[in-house]
Length: 178
Image (tube, rainbow, N blue to C red; front, side, top):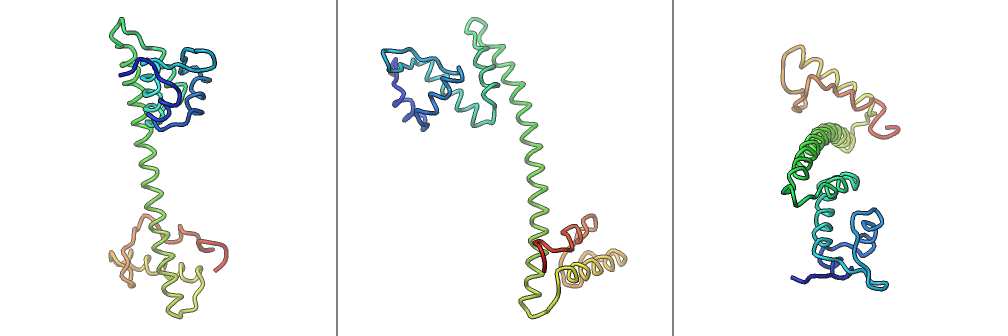
């Protein structure tokens, strides 16, 4: 492997723009040697860039990446750096799991809303003149009747969640008006 690299070589190797590499320099994450106006990157700079980009892909902030890079100490076998990375990775995993749960909840809600909207549009397309408000009211009445009877399906055959009433989709409609 080469001992030194140009900004263009690193840019091509990592699929980032030279501007991105200069940005990391401006933030103090990289410090290449200079030869006149040219930047000369060492193997260590190349490795740091790889770590910066990996950290960004994993969602770490530039400040967190800087902290980890600053802990590099080959004399201690990088133990402290690895210990800190382990703690930051655990925190990031927890954060991503929380976000994934939020996203899953939003997807469930959007799917329910879309199913309700689709059913409403099918009823309207079939020629039934009904407003969104009246449609929601009818579905709520069906659900209430099913809940009283202990039935899992509405008369129209849709499953329903007794903990999530249909009216949660706003009786004024999914968009303004009917």
